[in-house]
Structures are given as structure tokens and as C-alpha cells.
Length: 143
Image (cartoon, rainbow, N blue to C red; front, side):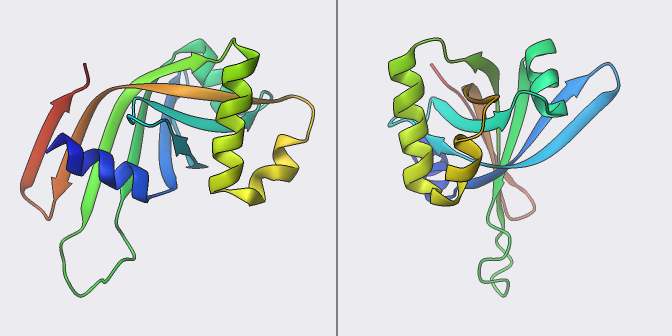
């Protein structure tokens, strides 16, 4: 089942990222790319955003990837929740590789990537929960 979950992550390129601060939850629509084993999800943002302040203040994150908009006649929407932790990328080599993955998947991010004050970061995934349809749910902890 975990391979089906990872396949959905690899297939998609957008997610909703939920962060939290003392003010409460905050959701952001994000473009992403993943490493080969779907353990790290890479994203980019300006350091001046609320989401970045939330990430650095409380690194607990929830990501939602779903299949809305695909063949609406089937009624079998998949929703995958990934829980994980914000990880600042310290290595210049890893940062460069993560940015290359992001730009290969989402070339439209190039103008953002070229701005000063922008940072590539990772979410280290701890668990997956897949909902298929309205009642079939599967949970997996990442080793």
C-alpha cells in the first residue's frame, strides 16, 4: 500500500501545506518535488512569508495531495495526508539538487528562485494516510 501512496506523491506536483503558529493553522498551496524514496518533499518560499515564519517557529507540517479534478464521474477521489517536519537544508549541494528537482518539475518557479531572500527547504515525511473514496483509509509510518 505504501507504494501506491508514494506513486500518488510522485504523480502530483501540488499540495496544500498546513503550518501552525500561536495564531492558529495556516494553509498554503505549494508546488513540490520529491526525492527518489518520497522521504523528503522539496519546496521553495520567500523567508518573509507567514508560512516560513510558521515553519521555523513550529516545524510540524501536514501536506495534502489529492486527485480532485480528475475524471469527476468516477467518484473515487484519493486524498493523501503526509505528516512531517520542516527541515532546513544546510548543505549547498543538497540545496542545489533540490532546486534543480523543483525547477525541472515546475519551470515557472524560476523567477521566484532567482529572487533574494528565497529558500529551498524540505519536509521530512513521518507518515502517510490515504483515503480512497469516502471510507477506505490506509495508514503507514515511514521508517
